[in-house]
Image (tube, rainbow, N blue to C red; front, top):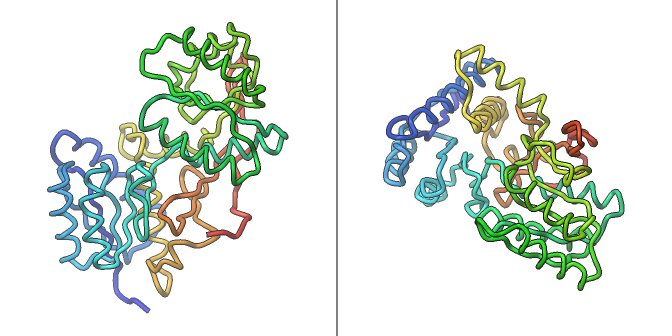
Length: 340
């Protein structure tokens, strides 16, 4: 059993071009400690300067200071630089990146990636017996992430995968729609189309697809939580963090610091709150504690750290309607599969 205060390092860009981001994350971490009410956790805020070299130096200093857990860094190159150091010591890293390619043993990627959103919205489609899936995705790293998750999840859920086409930035929506509608027709259609475009781009492609004769329901990502009502997207579904939870955190942060939080401040809050809760456990930050099947309650809803370094989240399913966006399936309040 570990005794004495738990030392938790915060690897944040506290100077340089991203200093404002780093300060917001540090504020959120401090707020978490106050809310949880734990007094035997020592936070070690260390400046990465937002660079791989700075992150390496900060991680080295954290290890020399006896850190038992590291939260951060934020950027992919920083996480890649730090990972060899933490793995050598067997120290868990709660990275604030959303790059799932960096996930692995003892390296947990807390950032919101499209994977959990794809899983949730596909589960909902499957419940409604919509089993044939096609996809129109951006030709980008974001699109790559969606496609890899889609390929894996469709097979795992016993669904079938139809045409997948990638859309280059700035491509003419009419030409994209003509090509995709042709491929869709040749494949015998689909029950749903995963449209992995942004809130700005999705309405343009949706209109073009409707004009090309495609009447299939669209599925989207959390990028659509601020989308402008568009008739061509009416009836579409997407999965995202419950907006009421996100708004509650933003309001509390605003009241505390008289400024709005950065969009990823909730990650620093949840990671620090998790550390505070586990500091009371007999084995503190052992894998068995971090990877609890029941997960943790966070500001964005429930979440669970998986053995492969990914994070499962409890998301709500939303529907786009002419009058706006509404929840059609509430986010779960607990994990029920008992899996790790």
